Length: 179
Image 1 (cartoon, rainbow, N blue to C red):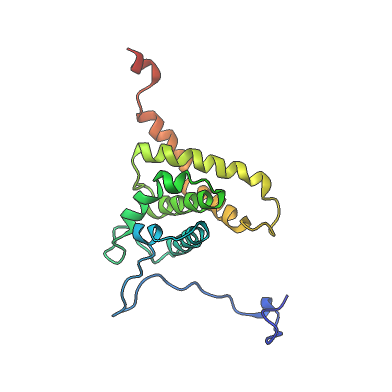
Image 2 (cartoon, one colour; image 1 turned 90 degrees about the horizontal axis):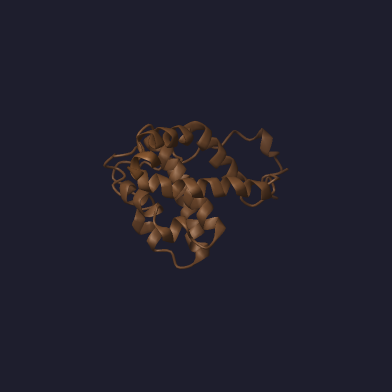
């Protein structure tokens, strides 16, 4: 496998590329990517998918810190991602990248997610749905393979199941609600 036609050096001999930091350098303005406004400016389904992928890429940057003045739109982005227009979008790719962005936010804010119980309960069924979609993603050549892989990796790191178990312990039981 070669990088391009002009460079016949095998990719395996190339030094690993480092991810660019989302952190602005001195004098540079903060990128609006990590904001609800960035997502809301989409012009089509394909543009929305592209924007969600960009958001996920920026969220996965370890330099992004929650509650940092460098990223003032992060809380708004977290809130926007649980809106029905994203989380329950008719397109499965939009839902996949929305869930991935939510899981990245869970990872970033761990151990205290920025979502309340109701919002977590909105996200969880979509996570389950994306895990069910793994049945159709059996090969690394599948278009969304890396996204599903990232989702699984983040779920193993965040341990969202623990959050849900703890949350269900605090919710009133059905027997208490009937009394």
